[in-house]
Length: 615
Image (cartoon, rainbow, N blue to C red; front, side, top):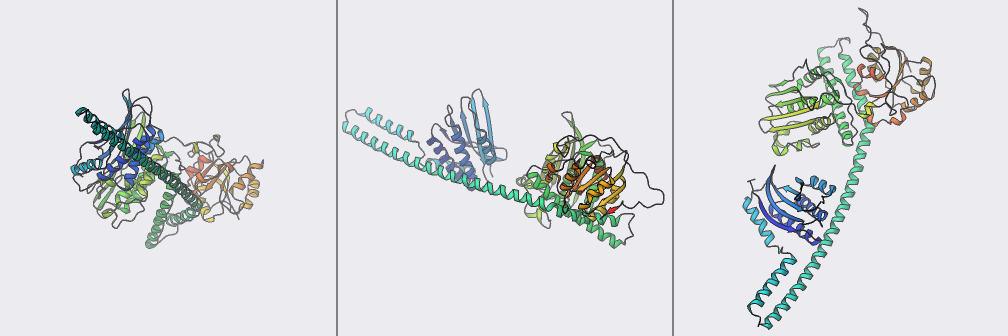
Protein backbone atom coordinates (compact mmCIF):
# COMPACT_ATOMS: atom_id res chain seq x y z
CA UNK A 1 0.00 0.00 0.00
CA UNK A 2 1.35 3.42 -0.98
CA UNK A 3 1.92 5.79 1.93
CA UNK A 4 -0.97 8.09 2.73
CA UNK A 5 -0.28 11.36 4.50
CA UNK A 6 -2.33 13.01 7.20
CA UNK A 7 -5.76 14.21 6.05
CA UNK A 8 -8.40 15.95 8.15
CA UNK A 9 -12.02 15.10 7.30
CA UNK A 10 -14.22 16.47 10.05
CA UNK A 11 -14.17 18.29 13.40
CA UNK A 12 -17.38 17.87 15.41
CA UNK A 13 -18.49 19.33 18.74
CA UNK A 14 -20.19 16.78 21.03
CA UNK A 15 -22.80 18.22 23.36
CA UNK A 16 -25.92 16.08 22.87
CA UNK A 17 -27.02 12.58 21.88
CA UNK A 18 -27.71 13.69 18.30
CA UNK A 19 -24.06 14.77 17.99
CA UNK A 20 -22.98 11.25 18.95
CA UNK A 21 -25.31 9.87 16.30
CA UNK A 22 -23.80 12.26 13.71
CA UNK A 23 -20.30 11.08 14.76
CA UNK A 24 -21.38 7.48 14.28
CA UNK A 25 -22.84 8.29 10.83
CA UNK A 26 -19.78 10.17 9.60
CA UNK A 27 -17.47 7.47 10.96
CA UNK A 28 -19.42 4.82 9.05
CA UNK A 29 -19.27 6.81 5.79
CA UNK A 30 -15.52 7.45 6.09
CA UNK A 31 -14.71 3.83 7.00
CA UNK A 32 -16.54 2.51 3.95
CA UNK A 33 -14.87 5.04 1.66
CA UNK A 34 -11.39 4.24 3.08
CA UNK A 35 -11.81 0.48 2.66
CA UNK A 36 -12.78 -0.67 6.19
CA UNK A 37 -15.61 -3.19 5.92
CA UNK A 38 -17.28 -6.05 7.78
CA UNK A 39 -16.21 -6.70 11.38
CA UNK A 40 -13.57 -3.92 11.29
CA UNK A 41 -16.18 -1.30 10.34
CA UNK A 42 -18.55 -2.53 13.07
CA UNK A 43 -15.77 -2.35 15.69
CA UNK A 44 -14.72 1.19 14.69
CA UNK A 45 -18.27 2.57 14.66
CA UNK A 46 -19.12 0.85 17.96
CA UNK A 47 -16.03 2.29 19.71
CA UNK A 48 -16.71 5.82 18.36
CA UNK A 49 -20.29 5.66 19.66
CA UNK A 50 -19.30 4.24 23.08
CA UNK A 51 -16.43 6.72 23.64
CA UNK A 52 -18.61 9.68 22.56
CA UNK A 53 -21.44 8.59 24.86
CA UNK A 54 -19.02 7.99 27.77
CA UNK A 55 -17.44 11.48 27.47
CA UNK A 56 -20.69 13.35 26.69
CA UNK A 57 -21.08 16.32 29.04
CA UNK A 58 -17.32 17.04 29.30
CA UNK A 59 -16.34 20.69 28.84
CA UNK A 60 -15.42 21.72 25.26
CA UNK A 61 -15.75 18.14 24.00
CA UNK A 62 -14.83 17.77 20.30
CA UNK A 63 -13.76 14.98 17.99
CA UNK A 64 -11.63 15.16 14.86
CA UNK A 65 -11.70 12.47 12.17
CA UNK A 66 -8.56 11.99 10.04
CA UNK A 67 -6.04 9.59 8.53
CA UNK A 68 -2.41 9.55 9.64
CA UNK A 69 0.68 7.29 9.41
CA UNK A 70 1.23 5.18 12.53
CA UNK A 71 3.51 2.16 13.32
CA UNK A 72 2.26 -0.72 11.19
CA UNK A 73 0.67 1.40 8.44
CA UNK A 74 -1.82 4.20 7.81
CA UNK A 75 -4.67 4.44 10.35
CA UNK A 76 -8.12 6.00 10.39
CA UNK A 77 -8.10 7.98 13.67
CA UNK A 78 -10.63 9.74 15.87
CA UNK A 79 -9.17 12.21 18.42
CA UNK A 80 -11.47 13.22 21.30
CA UNK A 81 -10.37 16.40 23.16
CA UNK A 82 -11.96 18.03 26.22
CA UNK A 83 -11.21 20.12 29.29
CA UNK A 84 -11.87 19.77 33.00
CA UNK A 85 -10.84 16.89 35.25
CA UNK A 86 -13.01 14.10 33.85
CA UNK A 87 -11.23 10.92 32.66
CA UNK A 88 -12.61 8.27 30.30
CA UNK A 89 -14.12 5.19 31.91
CA UNK A 90 -11.80 2.20 32.41
CA UNK A 91 -14.23 -0.14 30.62
CA UNK A 92 -14.36 2.23 27.63
CA UNK A 93 -10.55 2.36 27.37
CA UNK A 94 -10.25 -1.42 27.68
CA UNK A 95 -12.92 -1.93 25.01
CA UNK A 96 -11.06 0.41 22.62
CA UNK A 97 -7.75 -1.38 23.25
CA UNK A 98 -9.36 -4.78 22.72
CA UNK A 99 -11.36 -3.97 19.57
CA UNK A 100 -9.07 -1.56 17.67
CA UNK A 101 -5.43 -1.49 16.53
CA UNK A 102 -4.74 1.97 18.05
CA UNK A 103 -5.70 3.47 21.43
CA UNK A 104 -3.80 6.22 23.25
CA UNK A 105 -4.86 8.50 26.13
CA UNK A 106 -2.97 11.54 27.46
CA UNK A 107 -3.75 14.30 29.95
CA UNK A 108 -2.07 17.64 30.69
CA UNK A 109 -2.87 21.02 32.20
CA UNK A 110 -4.29 22.07 28.84
CA UNK A 111 -6.82 19.23 28.66
CA UNK A 112 -7.36 15.58 27.75
CA UNK A 113 -6.89 13.67 24.49
CA UNK A 114 -8.11 10.13 23.69
CA UNK A 115 -7.18 8.87 20.20
CA UNK A 116 -8.58 5.60 18.85
CA UNK A 117 -8.26 4.12 15.38
CA UNK A 118 -7.88 1.18 13.03
CA UNK A 119 -5.17 0.33 10.50
CA UNK A 120 -6.40 0.70 6.89
CA UNK A 121 -6.20 -2.46 4.75
CA UNK A 122 -4.00 -2.79 1.69
CA UNK A 123 -5.72 -1.88 -1.59
CA UNK A 124 -4.92 -1.19 -5.23
CA UNK A 125 -6.81 2.14 -5.10
CA UNK A 126 -4.38 5.14 -5.09
CA UNK A 127 -4.23 6.92 -1.70
CA UNK A 128 -5.35 10.28 -3.14
CA UNK A 129 -8.39 8.65 -4.73
CA UNK A 130 -9.37 7.06 -1.40
CA UNK A 131 -9.09 10.42 0.36
CA UNK A 132 -11.17 12.19 -2.31
CA UNK A 133 -13.75 9.42 -2.16
CA UNK A 134 -13.99 9.89 1.61
CA UNK A 135 -14.48 13.65 1.30
CA UNK A 136 -17.09 13.14 -1.41
CA UNK A 137 -18.93 10.69 0.82
CA UNK A 138 -19.27 13.33 3.51
CA UNK A 139 -20.23 16.12 1.11
CA UNK A 140 -22.77 14.06 -0.75
CA UNK A 141 -24.43 12.69 2.37
CA UNK A 142 -26.18 15.88 3.46
CA UNK A 143 -24.13 15.89 6.59
CA UNK A 144 -24.87 19.50 7.67
CA UNK A 145 -26.21 19.61 11.19
CA UNK A 146 -29.60 21.11 11.98
CA UNK A 147 -27.93 24.17 13.51
CA UNK A 148 -25.87 24.72 10.35
CA UNK A 149 -29.01 24.58 8.19
CA UNK A 150 -30.83 27.06 10.38
CA UNK A 151 -27.89 29.50 10.36
CA UNK A 152 -27.73 29.28 6.55
CA UNK A 153 -31.40 30.19 6.19
CA UNK A 154 -31.08 33.09 8.63
CA UNK A 155 -28.13 34.52 6.71
CA UNK A 156 -30.17 34.42 3.50
CA UNK A 157 -33.04 36.18 5.23
CA UNK A 158 -30.78 38.94 6.61
CA UNK A 159 -29.24 39.58 3.22
CA UNK A 160 -32.72 39.87 1.73
CA UNK A 161 -33.80 42.35 4.41
CA UNK A 162 -30.65 44.47 3.94
CA UNK A 163 -31.17 44.60 0.15
CA UNK A 164 -34.68 45.94 0.36
CA UNK A 165 -36.76 46.66 3.46
CA UNK A 166 -39.51 47.87 1.18
CA UNK A 167 -40.22 44.44 -0.22
CA UNK A 168 -42.71 43.42 2.51
CA UNK A 169 -44.29 40.82 0.34
CA UNK A 170 -40.90 39.19 -0.22
CA UNK A 171 -40.28 39.27 3.53
CA UNK A 172 -43.58 37.53 4.16
CA UNK A 173 -42.69 34.89 1.61
CA UNK A 174 -39.30 34.38 3.19
CA UNK A 175 -40.90 34.03 6.63
CA UNK A 176 -43.24 31.39 5.31
CA UNK A 177 -40.31 29.59 3.71
CA UNK A 178 -38.40 29.75 7.01
CA UNK A 179 -41.37 28.34 8.88
CA UNK A 180 -41.66 25.54 6.36
CA UNK A 181 -37.96 24.85 6.72
CA UNK A 182 -38.26 24.68 10.49
CA UNK A 183 -41.03 22.15 10.13
CA UNK A 184 -38.72 20.07 7.94
CA UNK A 185 -35.96 20.35 10.51
CA UNK A 186 -38.29 19.17 13.25
CA UNK A 187 -39.43 16.28 11.07
CA UNK A 188 -35.82 15.39 10.30
CA UNK A 189 -34.92 15.49 13.97
CA UNK A 190 -37.84 13.21 14.78
CA UNK A 191 -36.72 10.81 12.06
CA UNK A 192 -33.13 10.83 13.33
CA UNK A 193 -34.31 10.26 16.91
CA UNK A 194 -36.39 7.28 15.80
CA UNK A 195 -33.44 5.88 13.85
CA UNK A 196 -31.14 6.36 16.85
CA UNK A 197 -33.62 4.60 19.12
CA UNK A 198 -33.86 1.73 16.65
CA UNK A 199 -30.06 1.54 16.48
CA UNK A 200 -29.78 1.47 20.27
CA UNK A 201 -32.36 -1.31 20.38
CA UNK A 202 -30.25 -3.27 17.89
CA UNK A 203 -27.09 -2.67 19.94
CA UNK A 204 -28.81 -3.91 23.09
CA UNK A 205 -29.96 -7.02 21.22
CA UNK A 206 -26.43 -7.52 19.88
CA UNK A 207 -24.93 -7.21 23.37
CA UNK A 208 -27.46 -9.73 24.66
CA UNK A 209 -26.50 -12.13 21.88
CA UNK A 210 -22.80 -11.59 22.57
CA UNK A 211 -23.37 -12.25 26.27
CA UNK A 212 -25.17 -15.48 25.42
CA UNK A 213 -22.33 -16.54 23.11
CA UNK A 214 -19.79 -15.69 25.82
CA UNK A 215 -21.70 -17.84 28.30
CA UNK A 216 -21.79 -20.71 25.81
CA UNK A 217 -18.04 -20.39 25.17
CA UNK A 218 -17.40 -20.36 28.92
CA UNK A 219 -19.45 -23.52 29.37
CA UNK A 220 -17.63 -25.17 26.45
CA UNK A 221 -14.26 -24.21 27.96
CA UNK A 222 -15.28 -25.66 31.32
CA UNK A 223 -16.42 -28.86 29.61
CA UNK A 224 -13.08 -29.10 27.80
CA UNK A 225 -11.17 -28.59 31.06
CA UNK A 226 -13.25 -31.27 32.80
CA UNK A 227 -12.64 -33.62 29.91
CA UNK A 228 -8.86 -33.23 30.11
CA UNK A 229 -8.90 -33.57 33.88
CA UNK A 230 -10.88 -36.81 33.66
CA UNK A 231 -8.81 -38.46 30.93
CA UNK A 232 -5.34 -37.25 31.99
CA UNK A 233 -4.79 -40.20 34.33
CA UNK A 234 -5.95 -42.73 31.73
CA UNK A 235 -3.82 -41.17 28.98
CA UNK A 236 -0.54 -40.60 30.78
CA UNK A 237 -0.29 -43.76 32.90
CA UNK A 238 -0.12 -46.27 30.00
CA UNK A 239 2.12 -43.99 27.91
CA UNK A 240 4.55 -43.69 30.85
CA UNK A 241 4.53 -47.46 31.22
CA UNK A 242 5.34 -47.98 27.52
CA UNK A 243 8.25 -45.52 27.68
CA UNK A 244 9.67 -46.89 30.92
CA UNK A 245 9.37 -50.53 29.86
CA UNK A 246 11.19 -49.75 26.61
CA UNK A 247 13.98 -48.08 28.60
CA UNK A 248 14.24 -51.05 30.97
CA UNK A 249 14.59 -53.44 28.03
CA UNK A 250 17.40 -51.27 26.59
CA UNK A 251 19.18 -50.75 29.93
CA UNK A 252 22.80 -51.97 30.16
CA UNK A 253 21.90 -54.64 32.75
CA UNK A 254 19.00 -56.09 30.73
CA UNK A 255 19.10 -59.20 28.56
CA UNK A 256 21.10 -58.75 25.32
CA UNK A 257 19.15 -57.51 22.31
CA UNK A 258 19.81 -57.78 18.61
CA UNK A 259 20.48 -54.58 16.71
CA UNK A 260 17.05 -54.77 15.05
CA UNK A 261 15.31 -55.30 18.42
CA UNK A 262 17.17 -52.36 19.94
CA UNK A 263 16.20 -50.17 16.99
CA UNK A 264 12.57 -51.21 17.29
CA UNK A 265 12.55 -50.49 21.03
CA UNK A 266 14.10 -47.09 20.34
CA UNK A 267 11.28 -46.34 17.91
CA UNK A 268 8.72 -47.43 20.52
CA UNK A 269 10.31 -45.20 23.19
CA UNK A 270 10.59 -42.28 20.77
CA UNK A 271 6.98 -42.56 19.65
CA UNK A 272 5.86 -42.86 23.27
CA UNK A 273 7.80 -39.73 24.20
CA UNK A 274 6.24 -37.86 21.27
CA UNK A 275 2.75 -38.93 22.31
CA UNK A 276 3.39 -38.06 25.97
CA UNK A 277 4.76 -34.64 25.00
CA UNK A 278 1.70 -33.90 22.86
CA UNK A 279 -0.70 -35.01 25.61
CA UNK A 280 1.10 -32.91 28.22
CA UNK A 281 1.17 -29.88 25.91
CA UNK A 282 -2.58 -30.10 25.35
CA UNK A 283 -3.16 -30.49 29.09
CA UNK A 284 -0.87 -27.59 29.92
CA UNK A 285 -2.53 -25.32 27.34
CA UNK A 286 -5.92 -26.07 28.91
CA UNK A 287 -4.53 -25.41 32.41
CA UNK A 288 -2.75 -22.23 31.34
CA UNK A 289 -6.01 -20.90 29.87
CA UNK A 290 -7.68 -21.31 33.25
CA UNK A 291 -4.65 -20.01 35.21
CA UNK A 292 -3.96 -23.34 36.95
CA UNK A 293 -0.49 -24.12 35.56
CA UNK A 294 2.00 -23.59 38.39
CA UNK A 295 5.83 -23.81 38.07
CA UNK A 296 7.91 -26.03 40.39
CA UNK A 297 11.31 -24.32 40.84
CA UNK A 298 14.26 -26.70 41.37
CA UNK A 299 18.03 -26.51 40.98
CA UNK A 300 18.48 -27.17 37.25
CA UNK A 301 21.58 -28.74 35.73
CA UNK A 302 21.69 -26.68 32.55
CA UNK A 303 24.56 -28.68 31.09
CA UNK A 304 22.61 -31.94 31.39
CA UNK A 305 19.43 -30.28 30.09
CA UNK A 306 21.21 -29.10 26.93
CA UNK A 307 22.86 -32.49 26.49
CA UNK A 308 19.45 -34.17 26.57
CA UNK A 309 18.10 -31.69 23.99
CA UNK A 310 21.09 -32.40 21.78
CA UNK A 311 20.38 -36.13 21.89
CA UNK A 312 16.61 -35.82 21.56
CA UNK A 313 16.56 -33.36 18.65
CA UNK A 314 19.62 -34.54 16.73
CA UNK A 315 17.60 -36.94 14.62
CA UNK A 316 15.06 -34.28 13.58
CA UNK A 317 17.49 -32.29 11.40
CA UNK A 318 17.14 -32.51 7.61
CA UNK A 319 20.08 -33.92 5.70
CA UNK A 320 22.78 -31.28 5.45
CA UNK A 321 21.43 -29.19 8.37
CA UNK A 322 23.66 -28.79 11.42
CA UNK A 323 22.20 -28.56 14.93
CA UNK A 324 24.49 -26.55 17.22
CA UNK A 325 23.64 -26.74 20.95
CA UNK A 326 26.53 -25.51 23.14
CA UNK A 327 28.09 -26.99 26.26
CA UNK A 328 27.94 -24.63 29.29
CA UNK A 329 30.27 -26.01 31.98
CA UNK A 330 30.59 -22.71 33.87
CA UNK A 331 27.00 -21.43 33.78
CA UNK A 332 25.65 -19.64 36.91
CA UNK A 333 23.18 -21.43 39.15
CA UNK A 334 19.76 -21.82 37.56
CA UNK A 335 16.64 -22.34 39.72
CA UNK A 336 13.55 -22.77 37.56
CA UNK A 337 10.95 -25.32 36.50
CA UNK A 338 13.23 -27.70 34.61
CA UNK A 339 10.40 -29.47 32.81
CA UNK A 340 8.84 -26.22 31.55
CA UNK A 341 12.19 -24.79 30.41
CA UNK A 342 13.01 -28.04 28.59
CA UNK A 343 9.67 -27.92 26.78
CA UNK A 344 10.16 -24.28 25.80
CA UNK A 345 13.60 -24.90 24.28
CA UNK A 346 12.51 -28.18 22.69
CA UNK A 347 9.53 -26.53 20.97
CA UNK A 348 11.58 -23.57 19.71
CA UNK A 349 14.45 -25.74 18.44
CA UNK A 350 12.20 -28.37 16.85
CA UNK A 351 10.27 -25.59 15.11
CA UNK A 352 13.51 -24.25 13.67
CA UNK A 353 14.60 -27.73 12.53
CA UNK A 354 11.23 -28.37 10.88
CA UNK A 355 11.49 -25.30 8.62
CA UNK A 356 15.24 -25.39 7.90
CA UNK A 357 16.35 -27.52 4.92
CA UNK A 358 19.85 -26.08 4.49
CA UNK A 359 22.36 -24.39 6.78
CA UNK A 360 22.07 -24.68 10.55
CA UNK A 361 19.96 -24.25 13.67
CA UNK A 362 22.03 -22.69 16.45
CA UNK A 363 21.31 -22.18 20.16
CA UNK A 364 23.34 -19.67 22.19
CA UNK A 365 23.19 -19.24 25.96
CA UNK A 366 24.14 -15.95 27.61
CA UNK A 367 23.67 -14.37 31.03
CA UNK A 368 23.17 -10.73 31.92
CA UNK A 369 22.25 -8.64 34.94
CA UNK A 370 19.11 -6.51 35.03
CA UNK A 371 17.96 -4.64 38.09
CA UNK A 372 20.27 -6.62 40.36
CA UNK A 373 18.98 -10.00 39.06
CA UNK A 374 20.73 -12.53 36.82
CA UNK A 375 18.89 -13.51 33.64
CA UNK A 376 19.50 -16.28 31.12
CA UNK A 377 19.02 -15.51 27.41
CA UNK A 378 18.49 -18.56 25.17
CA UNK A 379 18.62 -17.47 21.50
CA UNK A 380 17.73 -19.86 18.67
CA UNK A 381 18.78 -18.80 15.15
CA UNK A 382 17.98 -20.78 12.00
CA UNK A 383 18.54 -20.37 8.26
CA UNK A 384 15.07 -21.59 7.32
CA UNK A 385 12.24 -20.22 5.17
CA UNK A 386 11.41 -17.36 7.55
CA UNK A 387 8.01 -15.90 8.42
CA UNK A 388 6.28 -12.97 6.64
CA UNK A 389 5.98 -9.81 8.74
CA UNK A 390 2.16 -9.87 8.76
CA UNK A 391 2.19 -13.45 10.12
CA UNK A 392 4.75 -13.05 12.92
CA UNK A 393 2.17 -12.33 15.63
CA UNK A 394 -0.38 -14.81 14.32
CA UNK A 395 2.05 -17.73 14.78
CA UNK A 396 1.46 -17.26 18.52
CA UNK A 397 -2.25 -18.00 18.11
CA UNK A 398 -3.12 -21.55 19.16
CA UNK A 399 -3.57 -23.98 16.23
CA UNK A 400 -2.68 -21.29 13.64
CA UNK A 401 -0.26 -22.38 10.90
CA UNK A 402 1.31 -20.16 8.23
CA UNK A 403 -0.09 -21.23 4.87
CA UNK A 404 1.86 -21.85 1.66
CA UNK A 405 5.46 -23.03 1.51
CA UNK A 406 5.69 -23.18 5.33
CA UNK A 407 3.40 -26.18 5.63
CA UNK A 408 4.30 -28.23 2.57
CA UNK A 409 5.28 -31.68 3.80
CA UNK A 410 5.49 -30.52 7.42
CA UNK A 411 3.05 -31.85 9.99
CA UNK A 412 2.16 -30.02 13.17
CA UNK A 413 -0.63 -28.87 15.46
CA UNK A 414 0.13 -25.15 15.59
CA UNK A 415 0.68 -25.38 19.37
CA UNK A 416 4.49 -25.19 19.56
CA UNK A 417 5.16 -21.45 19.67
CA UNK A 418 1.96 -20.45 21.57
CA UNK A 419 2.73 -23.17 24.14
CA UNK A 420 6.37 -22.06 24.45
CA UNK A 421 5.35 -18.41 24.99
CA UNK A 422 2.79 -19.38 27.67
CA UNK A 423 5.37 -21.46 29.55
CA UNK A 424 7.99 -18.70 29.28
CA UNK A 425 5.53 -16.22 30.81
CA UNK A 426 4.82 -18.64 33.67
CA UNK A 427 8.60 -18.89 34.24
CA UNK A 428 8.67 -15.10 34.68
CA UNK A 429 10.31 -14.40 31.33
CA UNK A 430 9.60 -13.30 27.77
CA UNK A 431 9.73 -14.91 24.31
CA UNK A 432 10.28 -12.70 21.25
CA UNK A 433 10.53 -13.54 17.55
CA UNK A 434 12.11 -11.78 14.58
CA UNK A 435 12.13 -13.19 11.05
CA UNK A 436 12.50 -12.37 7.37
CA UNK A 437 11.28 -14.59 4.50
CA UNK A 438 14.18 -16.46 2.93
CA UNK A 439 16.64 -15.37 5.65
CA UNK A 440 15.54 -17.39 8.68
CA UNK A 441 14.09 -16.80 12.13
CA UNK A 442 15.49 -15.79 15.51
CA UNK A 443 13.65 -16.63 18.75
CA UNK A 444 14.92 -15.29 22.08
CA UNK A 445 13.80 -16.70 25.43
CA UNK A 446 14.69 -14.64 28.53
CA UNK A 447 14.09 -16.22 31.97
CA UNK A 448 15.28 -15.20 35.45
CA UNK A 449 18.09 -17.29 36.91
CA UNK A 450 16.11 -17.73 40.15
CA UNK A 451 12.37 -18.36 39.99
CA UNK A 452 10.59 -17.93 43.32
CA UNK A 453 8.40 -20.82 44.48
CA UNK A 454 4.69 -20.42 43.77
CA UNK A 455 2.22 -20.24 46.68
CA UNK A 456 1.01 -23.77 45.88
CA UNK A 457 4.51 -25.22 46.12
CA UNK A 458 5.48 -23.14 49.15
CA UNK A 459 2.59 -24.52 51.23
CA UNK A 460 1.81 -27.98 52.45
CA UNK A 461 -1.25 -29.95 51.51
CA UNK A 462 -3.29 -28.47 54.38
CA UNK A 463 -2.29 -24.88 53.56
CA UNK A 464 0.38 -24.53 56.28
CA UNK A 465 4.11 -24.49 55.72
CA UNK A 466 5.41 -28.07 56.33
CA UNK A 467 7.77 -28.66 59.19
CA UNK A 468 11.36 -29.13 58.03
CA UNK A 469 12.47 -32.66 58.77
CA UNK A 470 15.88 -33.47 60.17
CA UNK A 471 18.18 -34.79 57.43
CA UNK A 472 18.34 -38.57 57.44
CA UNK A 473 20.88 -40.85 55.79
CA UNK A 474 18.26 -43.36 54.56
CA UNK A 475 14.81 -44.69 55.40
CA UNK A 476 14.58 -47.99 57.17
CA UNK A 477 11.20 -49.04 55.77
CA UNK A 478 8.72 -47.71 53.21
CA UNK A 479 5.22 -48.76 52.15
CA UNK A 480 3.92 -47.86 48.68
CA UNK A 481 0.20 -48.31 47.89
CA UNK A 482 -0.72 -48.45 44.17
CA UNK A 483 -2.99 -50.72 42.10
CA UNK A 484 -0.83 -50.49 38.95
CA UNK A 485 1.76 -53.32 38.99
CA UNK A 486 3.49 -51.91 35.91
CA UNK A 487 4.08 -48.59 37.64
CA UNK A 488 5.36 -50.38 40.77
CA UNK A 489 7.82 -52.39 38.68
CA UNK A 490 9.13 -49.20 37.10
CA UNK A 491 9.37 -47.37 40.45
CA UNK A 492 11.01 -50.28 42.26
CA UNK A 493 14.67 -49.45 41.42
CA UNK A 494 14.18 -45.85 42.55
CA UNK A 495 12.62 -46.84 45.89
CA UNK A 496 15.46 -49.31 46.59
CA UNK A 497 17.82 -46.35 46.61
CA UNK A 498 15.67 -44.60 49.23
CA UNK A 499 14.74 -47.29 51.79
CA UNK A 500 16.25 -50.55 53.09
CA UNK A 501 12.87 -52.32 53.08
CA UNK A 502 10.07 -51.56 50.57
CA UNK A 503 6.60 -53.10 50.92
CA UNK A 504 4.24 -52.88 47.95
CA UNK A 505 0.47 -53.02 48.44
CA UNK A 506 -1.63 -53.41 45.28
CA UNK A 507 -5.02 -53.94 46.99
CA UNK A 508 -6.02 -50.73 48.76
CA UNK A 509 -8.44 -52.48 51.16
CA UNK A 510 -5.44 -54.29 52.71
CA UNK A 511 -3.27 -51.17 52.95
CA UNK A 512 -4.32 -49.97 56.42
CA UNK A 513 -3.69 -53.34 58.09
CA UNK A 514 -0.27 -53.65 56.43
CA UNK A 515 0.74 -50.11 57.43
CA UNK A 516 -0.45 -50.53 61.03
CA UNK A 517 1.40 -53.82 61.30
CA UNK A 518 4.69 -52.66 59.80
CA UNK A 519 4.65 -49.03 61.04
CA UNK A 520 7.03 -47.83 58.25
CA UNK A 521 9.11 -44.69 58.27
CA UNK A 522 7.13 -43.25 55.34
CA UNK A 523 4.20 -44.03 53.04
CA UNK A 524 3.59 -43.38 49.32
CA UNK A 525 -0.09 -43.51 48.25
CA UNK A 526 -1.76 -43.35 44.82
CA UNK A 527 -5.01 -41.37 44.75
CA UNK A 528 -6.90 -43.07 41.90
CA UNK A 529 -7.59 -46.68 42.98
CA UNK A 530 -10.60 -48.98 43.34
CA UNK A 531 -12.46 -48.32 46.58
CA UNK A 532 -11.18 -47.33 49.00
CA UNK A 533 -9.31 -44.69 46.98
CA UNK A 534 -6.32 -42.68 48.18
CA UNK A 535 -8.44 -39.93 49.75
CA UNK A 536 -10.32 -42.46 51.88
CA UNK A 537 -7.14 -44.24 52.95
CA UNK A 538 -5.55 -40.90 53.97
CA UNK A 539 -8.55 -40.15 56.18
CA UNK A 540 -8.33 -43.57 57.88
CA UNK A 541 -4.59 -43.16 58.53
CA UNK A 542 -5.11 -39.65 59.94
CA UNK A 543 -7.73 -40.85 62.44
CA UNK A 544 -5.61 -43.68 63.90
CA UNK A 545 -3.08 -42.55 66.56
CA UNK A 546 -0.59 -45.23 65.48
CA UNK A 547 -0.47 -44.19 61.81
CA UNK A 548 -1.28 -40.49 62.06
CA UNK A 549 2.37 -39.47 62.63
CA UNK A 550 3.82 -41.43 59.69
CA UNK A 551 4.82 -39.07 56.82
CA UNK A 552 2.70 -39.56 53.70
CA UNK A 553 3.43 -38.42 50.14
CA UNK A 554 0.73 -38.63 47.47
CA UNK A 555 1.58 -40.00 44.00
CA UNK A 556 -0.81 -39.34 41.13
CA UNK A 557 -1.02 -39.26 37.33
CA UNK A 558 -3.71 -36.63 37.70
CA UNK A 559 -2.30 -33.13 37.54
CA UNK A 560 -1.56 -31.82 41.07
CA UNK A 561 -3.65 -28.72 40.40
CA UNK A 562 -6.69 -30.99 39.95
CA UNK A 563 -6.20 -32.69 43.33
CA UNK A 564 -8.75 -31.89 46.06
CA UNK A 565 -6.27 -30.62 48.65
CA UNK A 566 -8.96 -30.23 51.29
CA UNK A 567 -9.10 -34.05 51.51
CA UNK A 568 -5.36 -34.68 51.78
CA UNK A 569 -5.38 -34.36 55.60
CA UNK A 570 -1.78 -34.83 56.82
CA UNK A 571 -0.10 -35.64 53.46
CA UNK A 572 3.20 -33.80 53.09
CA UNK A 573 3.01 -33.07 49.35
CA UNK A 574 1.71 -34.23 45.97
CA UNK A 575 4.09 -35.64 43.32
CA UNK A 576 3.21 -36.26 39.69
CA UNK A 577 4.09 -39.74 38.40
CA UNK A 578 5.19 -38.39 35.04
CA UNK A 579 8.58 -37.12 36.26
CA UNK A 580 9.07 -39.17 39.41
CA UNK A 581 12.76 -39.43 40.40
CA UNK A 582 14.81 -40.05 43.51
CA UNK A 583 15.68 -36.33 43.65
CA UNK A 584 11.97 -35.43 43.79
CA UNK A 585 10.89 -38.12 46.27
CA UNK A 586 13.65 -37.48 48.84
CA UNK A 587 12.82 -33.83 49.67
CA UNK A 588 9.13 -34.70 49.84
CA UNK A 589 9.98 -37.33 52.51
CA UNK A 590 12.21 -34.91 54.42
CA UNK A 591 15.47 -36.52 53.28
CA UNK A 592 18.59 -34.73 52.12
CA UNK A 593 19.51 -36.06 48.62
CA UNK A 594 23.23 -35.79 49.44
CA UNK A 595 23.12 -37.49 52.86
CA UNK A 596 20.66 -40.09 51.56
CA UNK A 597 23.00 -41.49 48.95
CA UNK A 598 22.60 -45.30 48.93
CA UNK A 599 25.54 -47.50 49.88
CA UNK A 600 27.48 -48.85 46.88
CA UNK A 601 26.62 -52.47 45.92
CA UNK A 602 29.10 -55.18 46.69
CA UNK A 603 31.48 -55.93 43.85
CA UNK A 604 30.17 -58.58 41.49
CA UNK A 605 26.67 -58.62 42.98
CA UNK A 606 23.55 -57.70 41.01
CA UNK A 607 21.19 -55.08 42.45
CA UNK A 608 18.88 -56.45 45.10
CA UNK A 609 15.33 -57.27 44.10
CA UNK A 610 12.45 -55.15 45.33
CA UNK A 611 11.01 -55.34 48.79
CA UNK A 612 8.05 -57.42 49.80
CA UNK A 613 4.81 -57.33 47.88
CA UNK A 614 1.34 -57.62 49.39
CA UNK A 615 -1.45 -58.51 46.98
